[in-house]
Length: 139
Image (tube, rainbow, N blue to C red):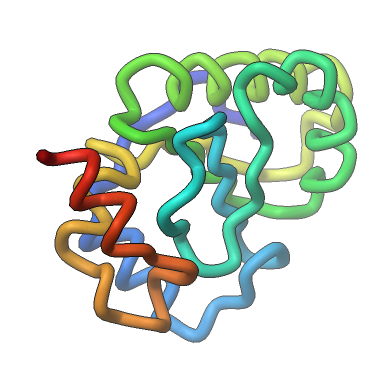
C-alpha cells in the first residue's frame, strides 16, 4: 500500500534514524534539494538533487529509490523547495513504481538550517560543515 500524503519529521527523529544502525540508501535516503545554498554542510550521506534540476531528474530518482522504504526531503528551511520536491516525487512514484512496494515520503521540519544548529558538531550526522558560510549567513 502506498502513501500519497507526506508527513514531517523533526531533526531529533532524523538524528535517531541515522544513528539507529539502519543503512542509508537502503533503509532510508535523505534527499537535499538545496541549490546554491548547499555549500556549508550537509546531512551525512544525503543526496543533493538541486531544486532547479529536480523535475528533470525525478524519474531517475524514483527508479533509484523504488526499493527504499523511507525517502526524506529537505531544503534550507523545508518551507517551499523540500515540500514541493516531496510532493512531485510522491506523485511521480505513484505513476512509475509497483503500488505494492511499501514506502513513505517525509519532510525534515525546519530543514538543514535548524538541523545544523543542533548537530553541526556531530560527524555522524553532518559533514562538510563550514563555520564561515554559516557565520556569513547570520551576520
